[in-house]
Amino acid sequence: MKEGTKCVQEGYKPSNGGPRVLPLYQSTTFAYDTPEQLAQVFDLKDPGFMYSRLGNPTCDALEKKVAALEGGAAAITASSGMSAILMAVTNVCSAGDNIISYAKIYGGTFNLFNVTLRRLGIECRFIDAETSAEDIEKLIDDRTRLIYGESIANPGMDIFDYEKVVPVCRKHGVLLMIDNTLTTPVLHRPFEWGADVVVHSTTKYMDGHASSLGGIVVCSDKLDFTGNARYPMFTTPDASYHGMVYQTACGSAAFVVKIRAQMLRDMGCCMSPFNAYLTNMGMETMHLRMKAHSENALALAKALKEQDNVEWVRYPGLEGDPMHALAEKYFDGGCSGMITFGIKGGRAAANKFMKALKLARIVTHIADVRTCVLHPATTTHRQLSDEELVKAGVPDNLIRVSVGIEDKEDIIQDMLAALAAAR
Image (cartoon, rainbow, N blue to C red; front, side, top):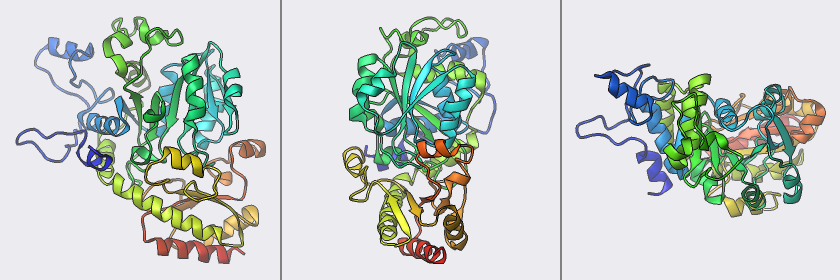
């Protein structure tokens, strides 16, 4: 099936005479006839459900849909995109370990890696898009557990270059984890380019309507820890879960099963069934929305480039953009709906511009059907120092636009009128 059909059909198969639409299983617990049956579920020998913190039929359907779209072995939902990232990283990292990450990533993720993980004894070594493969390789030691990047960096707009990084990961047996939130599997599928783990904030384009928080982790169907000394947690018995050896018992799904058996069990970062229900409903039109977001964003980017009080515009779909060649290589059918641009006059002009908007609203969110704007230096990235802002690719004149699916003429008119008011 193609992506559009998967968006509509995957994840839930109605039984004969059953509800055609995915039901909402709003229950914390599930009943069994015998103790032996429930014991089989606890031992992961029966695919049933016991408690919604560890799994729920509505969440399970969403997990199957996203895994199918990404081409992965298995997926697990989480309460937010940040909790998905946290569980994925701590699934392989303990105190004394380290990860390598691009610096120009979402500000919340940067802070998680730069501050919170360090407090837990996990070091993050930051790189940028210009860092060579040789210099990345120099940062790897025997305690390096993964390399992390975003398919499109939020808000830096850099595109992850798999052909540079994947050979380094393979040479050293290090996992590659990609946040695919901004492109979604409709436009880009990281597993096809060598990623091992994919994470999403389902709050964004998957839900698509700014109605439900959520996150998800997906693992590749080619993931195999056999013989890889970096990850003994998958090839040795887990004393906290019946002595299970995840690689032996679960094969390519081992990464996700371990999250469910350990991280989700102990951290409790579970997605609510209601949010899974809404997200699944949103995903049924995701393939249509991603096309509209991409077309509108490209039209707006071209219009902004013509304005004399705009210093620069970043959108990978633009010819001449530094990332255009990588977008042509890695993306399929569009470059999603986020644009950044630099307004002349810095923070003061940005303030005037946003106050003059009529259609677009100022919100701390991206990737829903409505166009919205934000000034990251004073909001999402305000915890960063001036030096860190530069490293994160967030100069103080940067305005982030999440382009919605309204008529493009109305979006452009609103932006140009606000730019005129900001002169």
